[in-house]
Image (tube, rainbow, N blue to C red):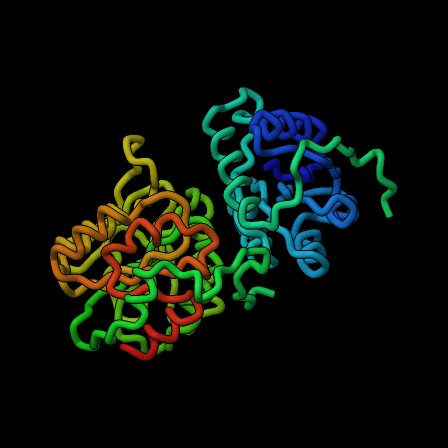
Amino acid sequence: MVYKVLVVDDSSFFQMRLRDIINEHPELKVVGVAANGQEAIELADQLQPDIISMDYEMPRMDGVSAVRAIMAKRPVPIVMFSSMTYEGARVTLDALEAGAVDFIPKNFAEVSRNSAVLKKKLQETLLAFARQAQPRVESRPAPVTSTSVTSASVKSSSVAPARARMPESARRPAEAAQASAPRRSLKGKIKLLVIGASTGGPVALSEVIQRLPVSFPLPVIVIQHMPESFTRAFAERLDKICAVHVAEARDGDLLQPGHVLVAPGGSQLILDKRGSVKILPGDDRVSYKPSVDITFASAANVFGAGVLGVVLTGMGADGSEGARLLKEKGAVIWGQDQASCVVYGMPKAVAGLADEVLPLAQIGPRLAQDF
């Protein structure tokens, strides 16, 4: 199976490099290149790609406007290329709310030197989302370029509509058994809520945290895989749309009921015995900065059985080792179910440890109800 990719970027250099990188993978084929948002809309309609890579700053029509138009007409997974700046983070979050499924930092140096890290990240991300789309191509189609085609709000919390859904009948037996198990009373037993997420996490976290009432009695820590420049913008956005207070965590912050602290990108967040936060520099020996495993493990050491760890959508297995440590202390683990995940990687890795496996739409209301 070969998946069709539409590349959208106003830079001819990036167009060429992205096409080369994408076409190196046997399951991906660039079938079109657009130089602005308007051309992207036209080519998306004409070529019906399985996946789109989208720049955000372009002439005629920007990437966020193009995402909205494409998702309204024919939903398709769209991965944004984002500037590694605070403003770039804000625009990227706009794109995710408009329906884009993920983002990749746009680094000129990495693209220029043909970085193996970028190549692996780009190919894996495009494949992860393309495979969720209805298969369309059996052989490599001929490419189309933009020159061959005639150019013709913050409170959104819906999950990207391009996501493939799994019927309830197809759920794994373990998930079905957990979903039907008697509910465990948590009120008065849990002292801290820690939520981990990666791919698809920003939208999923928005949906969950918006459901928490202003009187929510637990302190909350969020570990979302994001670059350093993104977490402050993400926390600020959540603070505007949520009843609870949300902020990027700083060294020395105290855990407070109804306050959500977002772990800063590029660093690690741990807890001390006094109930305060410590922010440590990121270590290149650790793949994820911040890491769900590290914060889960720290929470297990400080709060023991008084932790509820929630693992949302994400690629990889970050959180699995930390969840094991939490369970050894008697803590509670919830996982997002496969049907509602953008990528069922991290929740799958903790499924065997999870006390409950829940659809995304039920997690926020359950938190509000159970506490």
